Every structure is written in C-alpha cells, then in structure tokens.
Length: 243
Length: 115
Image (cartoon, rainbow over all chains, first blue to last red; front, side):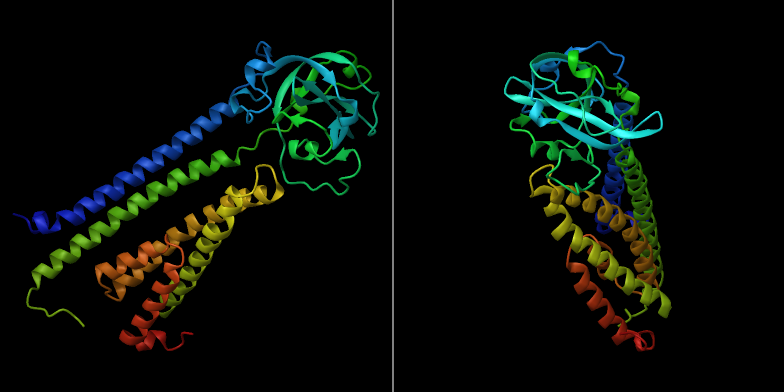
C-alpha cells in the first residue's frame, strides 16, 4: 500500500477535504448572495402597477427591500407641523430642497416628499389626502445635522425625521407622484433624481467568494507540502528528529 | 530571512489588532445599540471595513507565516497553531510571542536585531 494511503494519514487527508469543501461551499454561498443582491437592485419597479400601501408594509414593519421603488397608494391626513426640508437636492442643475410633509395613515406617519423648492419654504398642506407615489428606503450616509433645531435636515433619514414628528413613523418614505393639493406649486421629484442604492455591499460578497476559494487553494498547497514532508521523512528513517 | 521573520511579526500584530477591534468594538457596536442610531451606523461601517481588511491581510499572513514555518522547520502542529491563531482574538498575540521566543532560542542570528 502506498505510504500516504495508510490509515494513520487518513485524518490529515480528511481534514484537507473538509477544509476544501468548506472553502468552496462558503465561496459559492457568497457568490449567490452577490447575484441575489444585484438582481434585487436591478429590479425596476417604478413602472409596475401601484399597490395599496397596506399590502406592502405596515407601520411596524422593517423596510421591505424587495419593494424599493414600488408605486404605492394610501389615504391619510397631512401632519403640517412635521414639514421638513431636505438640503442639497438638485433639479435641472439648480440646488434646492425637497419638501417633506408626513401623512398620518392609521397610527403611523409616512413621510411624503411632495416636491422640490429652491428655498426651504412651501405652502402648507392640511386635511385629508390620497397619495400616489414611489416607496423609498431611508437614506443613511451618516451626514450630520449641523442644526437639529431648525426644519432643514441633511438627508432623508427616518431617524432624523422622528425627532420632528409626534407619531410613529414608517421605516421608509414615499416620493409623491400625486398628492392632491400637496404637490401643486412644487417642482416634481422624479424617481430618477432619487439617489441610487449603493452596490458596495454586493461587491463585498463577490470579494469574499474569491477569498474563500483562495483559502481553499491554500489548503491544497499546505496539504501537498505536508504529503511531501511525510514521504521525505519516510525515505530517511535513520535520521534522528532535529531538536 | 530576517526580513521574513520581521514581516511575520508585523503582520501578526496587524492581524491581531484588527481582529481585536473587530470582535470587541465593531461587532458589539453593530448589534447592541438601537437600529438607526449614529453609534449603530458607525458600528456597521466599522464592521465592514475592519472585516474586509482583516480578511485580506490574514491571507498575506497565511502565506508569510507558512513560508517562515517551512524555512525554520517548525513542527506541523506548531505551524497549524500559527496559521489558525490569526482567526482567534487575543490568541495571536500569545502565539507571536511564543514564535519569537522559539526563533530566539533556535536561530539567535535571526532575532539579533529583533525587539
């Protein structure tokens, strides 16, 4: 029987196979995560038929990632006191603000971006309203609000809105396509002018996949060196082990 | 050869520090504070950053320490310990210390300029 097939070496061979299988499997898993993430991003829902908001999410749900950009409809009441202006928003090359007023839907408030304005001011909206618009996830680049007391916020982050609104908030917001009187007098914000979701997290998955396969290759390399060592040691049985 | 030994020590320190920050600072910050708070966001970003950095530097560490182990004819069990230490927090500092002692004892010419 060849030396390396003897039962006393089986454990080491098995260890290599387990390490290799784990590295290949984890790499494939990361590759799938990368593909799934890209597919989800590539899905353009903005032209899909509108769904009632209650079918997509409730006020307590975490943001449903598969519905990013989904057109939704809902009815509620404007909360004019919660109006905020999101800074640094461009429209046709001009810098201005998004005008956001929350709409109370049942027990929770949905932030609604009504439109764009060159200055942080807009006509008040009040009363009941039927909104049609695109569902968006909270932004979060970590921009800091240099003056939390005023009604201008640096980005459309739900955590920043919470401090200004006296109701539970949905974990997302809606860019209005039509919100009755709420959208009149304001330039329309199209879904195209909404920042894209970052793809870096998916790139990370791809890099992790390669990394696992490199680890697998390294396991084979170590195993091969080990085999050679065993053969060399067996070829010189008279050599005392070096201290 | 002495360069290889120094490279090993530097890499072991970097891997050790990254792993310590990852396990004892970044991951707790990612999961303990409430979602959406700036502390939690920082933890999330830090976990990605340090995690990716540790992953790639650990690969370099594997190659360097395996090469060193073969040249110095370390036993297979000690070699395995050195390689795996890069994945277990704190352990790598102790293993690096043991490896340095071992090199000083067995190859004093390599450790002469060492710290």
